[in-house]
Length: 260
Image (cartoon, rainbow, N blue to C red; front, side, top):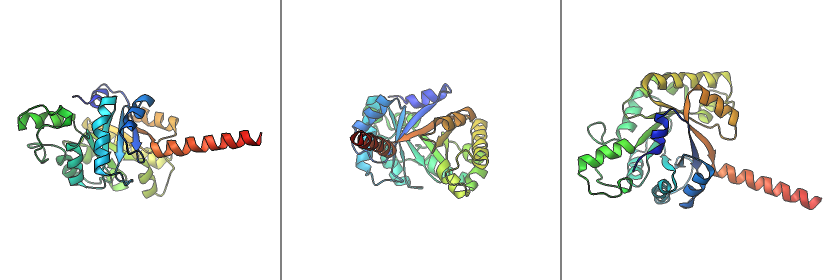
C-alpha cells in the first residue's frame, strides 16, 4: 500500500480533507471520494464515535481512494496507537503547544529507533503480508502521517521548535480554537489570525513540514487565501454541517413551494 496524500503533498499540491463527526458506516469513504476529497479524518475529539467504528471507516477508506486520519483527544497516545494498528494512516493531535509535547506525540506514532510505538507486526495497511518486525516497522513508518495542531498563542510562539521535531509531518493551525483563545472568535480573516498563520507557515517552510489548516470550511476564498500562504492540507468540510445545510435548504424550498 502507499499513502497518496503524502505523494500529493510531496509535489506541492493541495489535499482536501473531510471531517467526520456523524457518520458511523464505511460508505462515508465512498461518499468522500465521490465528492472529490483526498482524505477524511474521524474526529474523536468532538464526537462519541467509537474506536471500533473509527477503525472500520479507516480500514475501508483506502479502497475508495481516500486516505483516513483520526483526531484523538488531547495527548491520548494509547488510543492513537490502537487506531494506527486498526487502519488509520495518521493521527491528528490537538492542542500542541511545546516542542516537548510534539516530541512525545510524534514518538508514539513511530517505531524504534525514531520513536517508541509498540511492535504490532503486519497490519491491514500492509495487506497482512508476512514481514519481519523490522521491515513492517519501516514500511508502516513510511505510511504514517503525524499532525500536530496549534490552537493557542503559546503554540504559535513555539511554532518553529514544534515544526523542527523529527516525526512531525504536518503542523495544522486550528483556526477556530486559536481565534477563540485570542479573543477573536470566528474572525478567521482578522489581522491577528492571519499573522499567527503566517508565522506557522514560515516555520513549516523553514523545517520542510506541511502547513495544514482547519476551520475554513464553507469559505472557499478564505481557503484559497491560506493556500496562497502555503497551506497544502485543508479541512474543507464536515459531514454534520453538510447534513444541516442540505436539510435546511430542502425544507425552505419545500415550504416556499407549498406557499406558492
